[in-house]
Image (tube, rainbow, N blue to C red; front, side):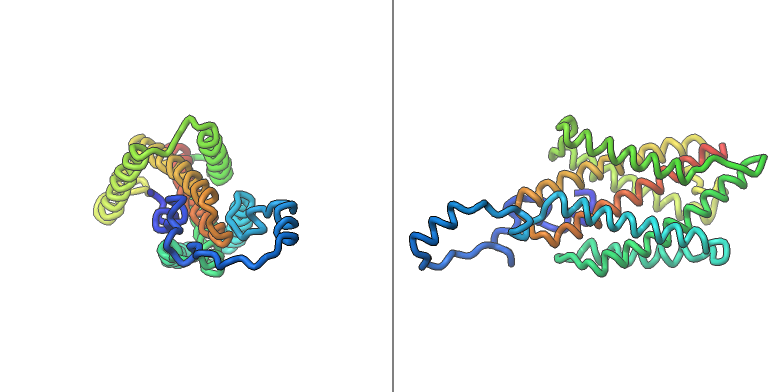
Length: 280
């Protein structure tokens, strides 16, 4: 899987992943229930997945929506204080990176750590968005620029909706070939990005690294958006597997965390693209 949040948890990979684990079912003891009680049990309404403590799509939606709302509030507050503390986004980036790695490789989800990660990402997103907006303004002749932050938010929402619609329609399916292609593309993009960052210290650039100057940078950005959209489809498939496998309800936090990671990446790619368009 491309997203380590899902790929490191067998819960989201295989409906049979929980067999033999700590949540595996054990042999039931011999029943001592009398016939009358047993008949009442069969006549009663069946328990819902929520009542059984199983993962549901509603759980994932609620957790994801709550984390997104928290991220937006923190980002807005950070935007307001960034003119006085322009380096604050760096703290959010560093803390978010550490907490992201910790949460990605935990076997059990920690709501507290996931919430802390969301707050750190809110600080990073708010600060970097403010700097990108002013970066775009400085690149124009009249001192104004398009509202690239709003454009990036809308583009992210539209891409999320499109990826979800394609996944639900069955027109795009997660197959072994699809997974292999995405893994290779992700590794290639990561290597490209690392080289770009290293060259940034030695070669002139437009602000995005020498390998992402001008029109070529926009092409690379569009490729990255495609990768992020493909990762969203992989995330949806992983969540579907978790629900069908009857994963514990607490893994809704892991699913929400994984979606937040991909959405933040997608938003940053759009933000970079719109900033390039404005300056060009």
